[in-house]
Length: 214
Image 1 (cartoon, rainbow, N blue to C red):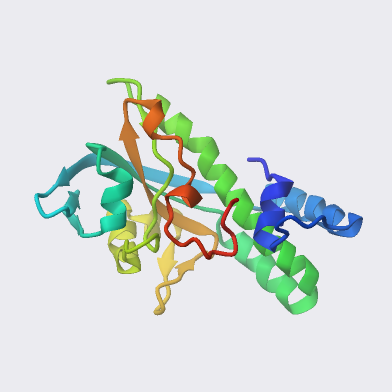
Image 2 (image 1 turned 90 degrees about the vertical axis):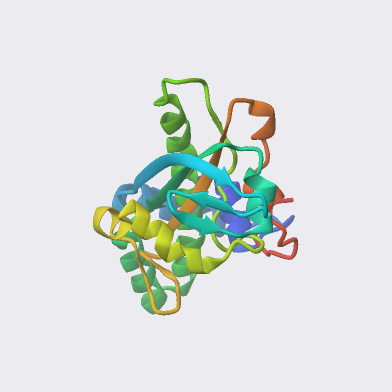
């Protein structure tokens, strides 16, 4: 797992602005600590996407009615449901710094988000390579909350993966994941690399997001 400084800066809100030397040094310090102190894990399940005439989709018994989901994965016949987390240790350090050192808390929040993204990018090719039936390429991950893909489906998707028992991922009453640096997403599968080049920001309709890549 690597943590790209530019990604941390994006999460910190440095859009076109250059940080000072102290900020860069703090990013490097926190990034090293995240790599040392956290233990990311993941799991996944592959299944068929059953597309219906009305545009909805069924994945392993879960019904998905989302225009955004169909737009992103509509030409995929299969997908991998994928979940990953940095674990509770990331939350413990985040909470500790929030009480004691606000600047470190801000950088930890940004760097751990970049770390989780990096970890997901690292393991996805390994998953694709494990399929022996043909050469598969993944679309960028598509999670509940993108466009009109309802956040209410998070619980069902995590339950399908048994993510609570296997990864320790749970949902709060407000629908937030714990550990905080966790994700569940669909990875559409295609036999053509040309249909899988969009990053998640390019696929997301929230053009006002402060973390959006240029």
